[in-house]
Length: 159
Image (cartoon, rainbow, N blue to C red):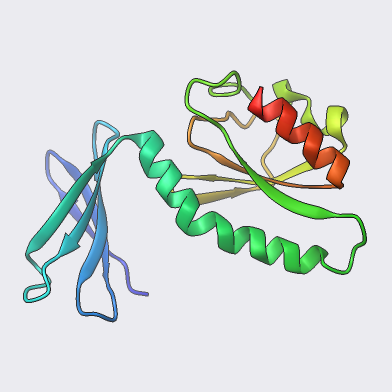
């Protein structure tokens, strides 16, 4: 896909691409951290027919819905032949006790035996996050572990 990036002076940037149906789909990232999901009209790909304002947490959740399933499916495929190992994703709720805290502070690996292999945030995948990686509300945490370890992970991240 060819993603076009257009600076919007005083506003931020627009990133969009043409879909097979002839419409442009994109995101405006505002300088103040807000986002807008935009869709062009059917007749004119330069005319915006819909704009939906999103908070950073909402944008992160949407990005996770679009990107995280492919990542998890890929990891599950890689671990399919390893008995007893599974992959799951867990959301970090805005305002939860891990929103704003580091991976090291969770002590997840030592408490569960599971490993965080990636964090999906606002459409970007952060593979193999280091202990100083700071979680944010709306993140999707991708974890590999045993069934017991994943259950303990769920207990910890869900509070």
